[in-house]
Image 1: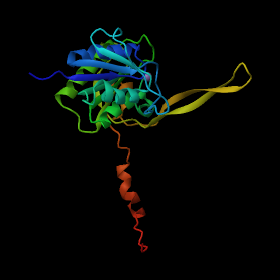
Image 2 (image 1 turned 45 degrees about the horizontal axis):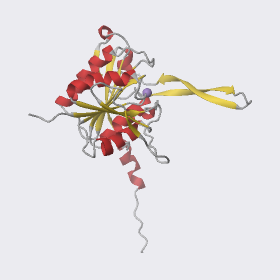
Image 3 (image 1 turned 90 degrees about the horizontal axis):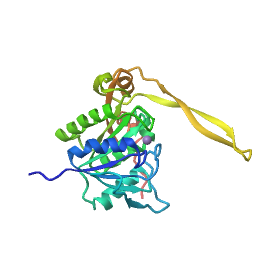
Image 4 (image 1 turned 90 degrees about the vertical axis):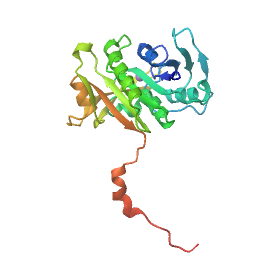
Length: 263
Ligand code: MN
């Protein structure tokens, strides 16, 4: 008899997010679920950690029926770090799942995403992990089709673990299950947000700014996550946290030098 698989679930939309609940409902069938999620929305926090103030971890057993749950005052990455060290008592879980995020984390969004940074932190810790996102920002989003694919992907990860230091960025188009065409394994599209700050004036007559923008895809490739999502496919991007531009190492190799001065 094999021991029970231990699964940590977190997100960046906060412990009350319906997307988190949807992920717990799926993960429950694969093992013993523990939730450690932020006590407030943490979208856009990327890989931020809390170092200048204390972190709080509160047990919130009433939130989920069959999972032990804690809410944390920190960022998604804080949640993973604290969970591994304190909740799991340095006995890391077998799987870390993050999401299901309310909104896309495809392409460059991965860098801003707390959801994906939580998965990345798990990969840094040597734990199998994935971040899941539904292309629907609304709080009342329908996670039915997303849950179907999340289940499939978790099953695949368990059957065949990812290589060390690799994790998954999974994005799921909005819509009913019948509208989704399948799964595409792809690369991250070259796309970005073209910023536009709305300028307003506060009641004291001082200017303030509100970030807004348009997401622009510069990538015409049909092997990207953006292409897959625009064509009704679930995108699966294998991701690594080694940001070295390996293809540029030889280009910069002539910069190498040895100090030949005598000591
Ligand atoms: Mn989010």
